[in-house]
Image (cartoon, rainbow, N blue to C red):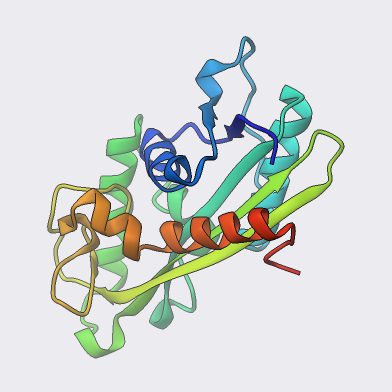
Length: 207
């Protein structure tokens, strides 16, 4: 695997989680901010997490001339037929910054689940990862999930996005996990470890 690997995300929380898992495995990670050029975000037009991750990896690899890793992730709620899904980050469609968007998304989700009891609030985080070369070749890809139920109010100060709402088997939310524990258990941690294995073995985990 060529190093360093360009991590194609503007989300500092995702960058931190990716570095925390891949760094100890000997995979150096660099941020978009380290580039001498600014790359605009691509329009995410694909219907699945995997296809959008590959679209973004190819976009940033081509624009930067670097091997790039991209993530597409979100929350799938069973009773909502998988919503918000690939639209998780822009579910509410309002907010001038990441914190405001997260809060609005959480409130919209709670409104959508009003009157639904806990047994029917099953959900999971999904993370798809892709690594692409500037010529468009996909070097590796992986998927991870993190299951729970949607709580009735946000809890916890760690994490981001819908972390305060996903209640795990032990009763804690994802936002109540310490960062190291979240990396061990989460959808992104699982996908990153699978991706690292595929890099090590020279295989594509999605193949």
